[in-house]
Structures are given as C-alpha cells and as structure tokens.
Image (cartoon, rainbow, N blue to C red; front, side, top):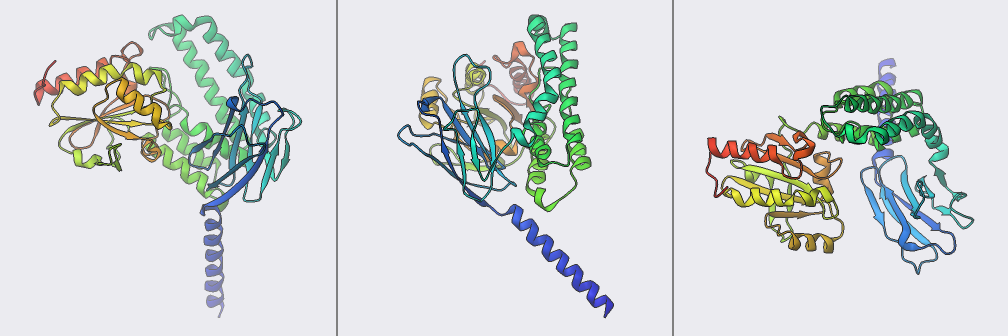
Length: 395
C-alpha cells in the first residue's frame, strides 16, 4: 500500500511538472495598446517586439491614433521595444517593457519619460537601471581609451590594442559579475539571453573573449533548471551550440527555397566546396566585399564551387535592387532567420567555406582587418585548393 501511494505521488508530481513545462513552452499571445505624445513624427518611431526567439519589427501608421501590437511569444514575457529617434540625442527616449497574455497598455501621452502602464512592466525598473549603473564606470573607461587611442588600436600589433582588449575583457567580466549577483531575478536570465549569449562572438581581430564553454558553464552554475525558465534556457543553450558551428565543425544542413522557388539543400552540395555568405543590402561591409565574392564565383567552375547568398534583408525591394545593382548571379536566399539562428550569426557579413565532406574550413573572422573587403585569405585558400585539386576557369 505504501509503495502504491509513493508511486501515485510520483506520478502526480511528474504530471504537474509536465503541465508546468507546457505552460511555459506553449505559444502564447499578447495584445498591447500604445499611444505616443502629440506631434510625434511616426517616421522616427522605432517599434519592435521580441518573442523569445527573434525580434519582429513593427511599422506604425501615422493615421493610427492608437497603435495596436499583437503577436505570439514563447518566453516568460514578450519584450516590447518602443523608441523615438531624435537628432542630437545620445539616448533615444522611450523604453523596453514586458507583457504577458493579459491585455496591456503603454501610454506616452504625458511625454516619453513618464509612460503610464497597464499590465506591463518597465524593464528599467525590473533591473535595467541597476545594470546601467553597474556597467557605467567600465564602459566609460573603455570608450575613453578608444577615443584617445583609436588610431593606434587599429594597428593589430600595437601595445595600445592589447590594453584596449584588457579593458574590453573588463567589461565582459563586469557583465558576468552582475548576472551572478542578481541571478535570482528574471532580469538576469533575460539579460543573459539578450546580451551575454553573444558575448565574444563579435570581437576585434585577435581578441580572445569569453568562450562558449565558459558561457555554458556559467549558465549551468547560476541558473538551475526551472519549469518557468525552460524556454529561455533552451534558447540560450541552442544558440551557444550554434556558435560552435565554425572552422573545424560540420556545417548545419538546411533545406529552403531560393528567390525563384527552387529547392536548396546544403547536403545536396556534398562533393563540392560551398561558400556560404550571410549578408544584407543595408550592410556596408557586406556590399564592400561583394566584388571579391563576384570574382571568386566567376573564377571557379560550378562543378567545384557553389556560392549561396543568404540575405537578412526584410525589405524585398531593397534586396532585389541590390541583386541587380551588384550583379549577384549566384544562389540567392531571402530572409530566412531560421538558417541564421542555426549558425548563430551575431552580425554581418559572415562567410564560411565548406569542404566536400560538409566541414567548415574557413571563417571570415580569420581575415585580418586589412583583408576583409578583398577576402585575401579566402582567395588564397581557394587558389591553393584549385592548384592541388581542381582547375580554375580563370584567374
């Protein structure tokens, strides 16, 4: 009888856990009413929301006196971002807010500094202000050093660059210390997802920042598994795993459609080298290196090298104009954020060269700053491969 009761209690506990997990992993929906101060220039409004996986931009219409935001989310909260861009201001007025399934309202009728909230939380009040104060001294010190020594820091062998890296690492250490101290709050976990999980992924050439194994160990040590945090932890761990898809790792397979409706599957390119280019028409460094990619594409036979461009543009018109203007004749994929997440693309441009077995053998981050536009290392790698294994059409 005792064993039966114990078994029953365990079953009930498991059922409750499953129900709890479902509560925080099921897609939920939010609805927010937003009003802005009279005279607001809607062209200067920047509104978006983060659903726990990606940021979704919202374009308000000037004729709408009341802005309605609706969407789905998986995290504990949906994050609403509302900012007003004004020339001459270092900090944009507005704010970031958390909302749930309860109908919410964010009213700026009395000015940008004093929003009136209903069923919404101002993230500054939930930990944001503390974080800004905590980080301000080390950020000021790093920025001041950059302002004073920026030219010398650009020299990859200078002592000033080494000092700058030390100050940059001090900023990362301070961020980690904040999250550790406030780890009992949801804000700390949210901050980890928003900022820390990309820490060390967008860095100056030669900088050795916080590594993926260090971040993973930090997460496990400071945020034990809880049902209400299951989605956030899963998102962070998946992103950290994707960050390790770099040189020496196997490329992540994907299947999608190009802009003409043709099926594109990475595995179908096995037996050939593949140059995977993540870019966007609005990204100046991306555009600057297009001539080098164009040269590479025209120099090698399609039997040996396939070039696939994955654009992160949202505006199809701007994307198509760029395709025409720069003569992009290789495979073109438009706005597929799922692929970018599989590769943990933190910023653009991003380039990988994949060998015939599916292994990544080159990452754009390996180029020195002086080489990025011309992609010298990539071209040298391909020339060596051509000399050793296959013939070029022309050089």
